Length: 451
Image (tube, rainbow, N blue to C red):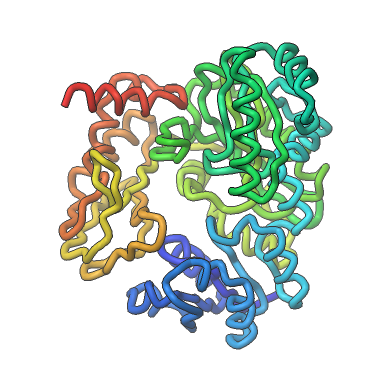
């Protein structure tokens, strides 16, 4: 059991975790870099400690500084949020070695699920459906590589075993492209992830990105919390998410969701996690597991009524889950728009001072943000400054509330992608639901061609 949590993150997720701590009567310690000094949200913590310069490598990624801050502040647990060190196995182990609680899975689970080859093997063992492809990593031998690709059938996709964030992958449409793609991707993987290991899968032409959220305790109990559709992506980065994923058979979702829980038991996973799938032609194909809290967790909270961060904290304290699968009921529909400080046409980040910050409200509207009027958006970090989440009895009502919320959101001093989200909500294909992961980039190209 712990009573003080150090939040090893910044911005909206740090504030989100701090609020959940206070709801449970836990003290919170926030760390910050010199680039975030003076931010209003830091005043809400029980303690706030500067741990280094603005550069992430010298602050939010500095494991030694974070552990020292935890000890100095009397924190017994560390919550990594998302990004930064949240899926870093060595950090999870270092926290445990320091006698502190890492609010997340064990280092072994992070390491196993972070290796895409090992993750697929574990999922196959647990009966989770996977994208067609060999279980092991790719060999160096040219003839063997060609035989593997021929057996899968073109097009195939080459991926880095330690990759993520859309990096370290190449699509190969024909046999004469294979060796060049493998060579380039292997070198990219070595440089970006320190691991040249690759694997190969069937490339799906028009899939959706569908996620299943899970929550598991240390006592063998687990539940899945419905589905999310995160298909609207630009350069493999999510832009807008919704829950539940529209148009998928409930019985199929239940089967896959239960297999995800079974997989967690199989690997000894505890905490919150998300199984990511490609979904095409009525079939699910596992691609990876995120062993952390996700940006889009609010849409699941809105449709289930659960505080996922609170549950995460309770599990980390060793409490058994107080809910069972039969208690999970998905009600209505929820959307989330990620609001970034960026030019809505060029997507160039726009750091600077926010002179006006008027957020929308009303029934079924939630804003997750750390920004206030006068806040200086730093140039050193991810450009997301807010999440607008709406909920309605139907998808149409959630979309109507989102249109109103975006129209009433006023930001001055910097450019944001609010206009982009407003345009997306008027897209006929998105209104119908179930667009594939390539839809947004096609739509952006068409928009550019018209301008």
